[in-house]
Amino acid sequence: MNYLAHSFLTFSDGQIVGQFLEDFIRNKDRYSFPKDIQDGITLHRAVDTFTDSHPAIHEAKKVFSPLVRLYAGAFVDVAMDYFVATDLSLHSLAGWKAHSLRVYSVLNEHEEWLPENFKKMLAKMEEDDWLYNYREDWGIQFSMRNVLNKARYLEPGIPVYEAFLNNKPFLQECYDGFFPDLRAHAQEINAQLQLENGSGNQFTG
Image 1 (spheres, helix red, strand yellow):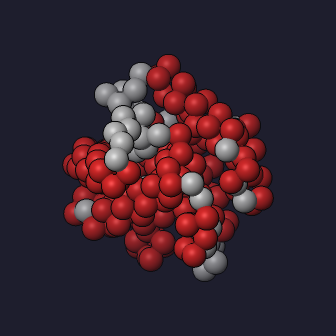
Image 2: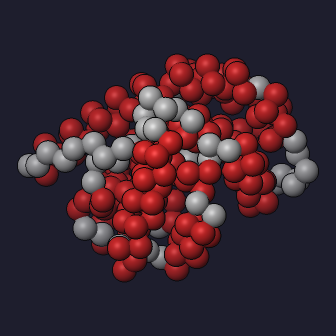
C-alpha cells in the first residue's frame, strides 16, 4: 500500500511515524526508535506482507504487469490510495482533509526522528497535500510519474496512468474485495502489539 493507506491504518501518533519511516531506514536501525514508532514499522511490514499475498491484489497487478512487469505492485499501491481517498465510508471529504492535516502535523512534531531525505519529501508532500489529493486523477498521475522516474529500469513514457484510467472500474472491484480484509488484519496486528505493550490504543484512521 501507499502513503495514504499506511497513514490510515494506524492506531497512534507513533505508529504514523513508524509507518512512514519504514521505507527510509535500515532494518538494523528500527530498534533505535521509541516503542510506538517501532510498532508502526512492524505494522507497515504486516500491511505490505498481507497486501502482497491477497488474491485481489494479484488480479489488480494484471492491469500493470504487461507494461512494467515486476514493478506492477508499486503502481497497484498508488492506485489503491486513490480508492482509499475516495472511499467515503471511511471518511467524509472533510474527514479526509482533517486526516491529511493531522498526519503532516504528527510527522512534523516528530521531526527529531526523521531522516533528512524523508524531511525533504515531507515538505513536498505537505505543500502539495499529497494525501488528500490522491482522490484526484491528477494526483494519481503525479504519483505514478514519480514511480516511473525513480524506477531504475522503466522508461518515463510508459502509459501506466492510462492503464489506470482504462481499468478504473476493475481496480475498484479489486479494492472493494481487498481493503476490508486489510483493515481487519491491521486491527489484529495492533491488538497483538498492544497485548505485548500492556496497553490498548484505539484506531485513529
